[in-house]
Amino acid sequence: MILGGLLGMAGGLLGFAGVSILTLTALGLTALVYGAHQLGFLRVPYPQRRAQVPHDARQRFPMWFIGGLYGISLGLNFLTYVQTPILYLVTAAALASGNIASAIALFLAFNAGRFLPMAVNYLPVSDIAVQNWLARRQESAAFLDGGLLIAFGAALLTLALL
Image 1: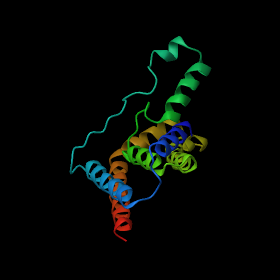
Image 2: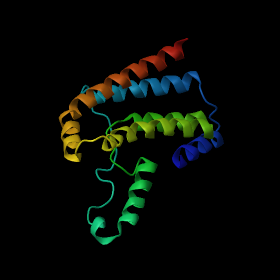
Image 3: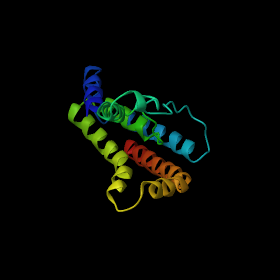
Image 4: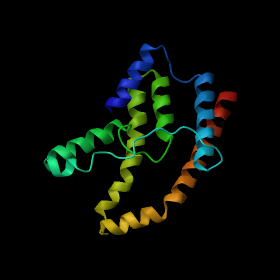
């Protein structure tokens, strides 16, 4: 929520006022490019961290402190490893909205999607079984992500043309 609020406020201060043909076109083209990246057709810069909290910190600090570090890292999104470039689109859309409430709503939806895989821990299955299942489907997830990005980009470009 903090990141979304800051981006919405920054967008408002920069004079962005929400949906425009230029915004739809830029977001649509970016989605198409990153979709092609996820599908393996293009190589596009994809900056991100490879780890969340240093592993040795788990031995040096109490669990409540480590939990706080993870919470802050996950909440700010850019401090963690994110497997989808959708984060970049959500960030650009939040900034372009120029509206704090809209930007927060965008990040709430994005973070809900990030939380869903962790919700599996509430099911009566072992953690290792979940990790193995996710690992076996990582390539399929990247393919699905690429398809969603392409579809989203095409939809945004279509809206820009209307």
